[in-house]
Length: 76
Image (cartoon, rainbow, N blue to C red):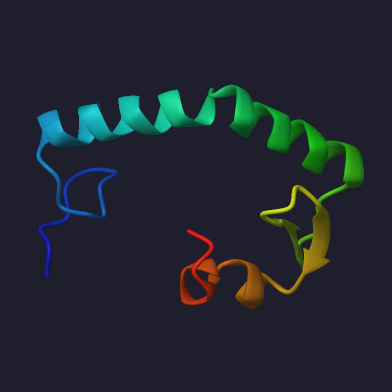
């Protein structure tokens, strides 16, 4: 089990945590991610389902469990 630092459930060192936060922020600000955020806000998020961005570019509302298991379908 990883050591639990302040606000750090992964047990990263301070330096590693700072680098990870910088990478995550950079990823969140990419044009592709910004476009998806904008689309999701226009469609309307729901706490009972996710909006799935299909490889074709289409967006469909799916169950949370289905959308967050994309690695099992080879989409990631």
